[in-house]
Length: 279
Image (cartoon, rainbow, N blue to C red; front, side, top):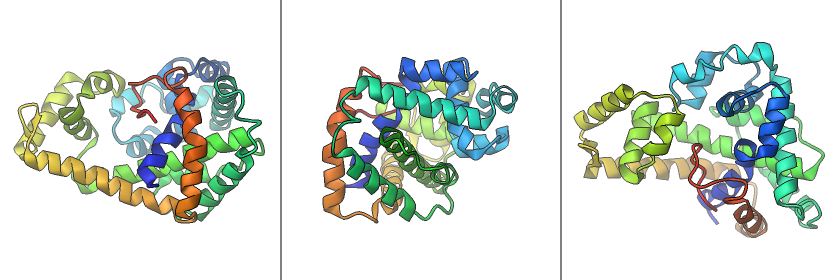
């Protein structure tokens, strides 16, 4: 069992906070109207009332002008603590709705104990979003604890992915353009990250100048860089799972994966604008 395989499962559990009507209802009741305002506020809330510059840095692949529609104005409407409460309420309600047998599964306490051990063992230096989530109080409700752990570990991986992109010399829009050349994801990403057509074209030109693109196609060098980024992200993510044995991680995957598969596409559509992969 590797970190990438388990991440796909945890990412799906986390994803209920974006796509389910239960989560959207909780966000709107908390004052966060609109998908992306809810996304930005609930995902940034562990950092406190962070400003546009800090959130742009940690979100990395969003256009600053896109995030500026929500920040910093959202904090005058919805304080971070209210955003955190709304995201937890919405996520837990969604999981209980779509997976009504999860709360009563006798394996759940063991799974959340294992996840808590993983989160507690991580060294969080250089991982701001993961660290901010890890510093939140651990929920007493095991369903809430499962969601919180999934969120914390996915942000750990996300922070590592940003580091991999930085060391590869790619800015946020270049990362999207390079990936689009491999998998065609740009069609769903472009309207959901705030980059303009001009931004996209300029990034494509920069990547071509580096020998990574030939028109809209990856060059051999571009394919190699894409593979390196994913491999580096996976390697950096492995550190989050070192407190468990391979057998424990395999057990955790066996427990979670059937539940995660039941969430797609009913609760977490695929494809989707966040980029959640199917489990």
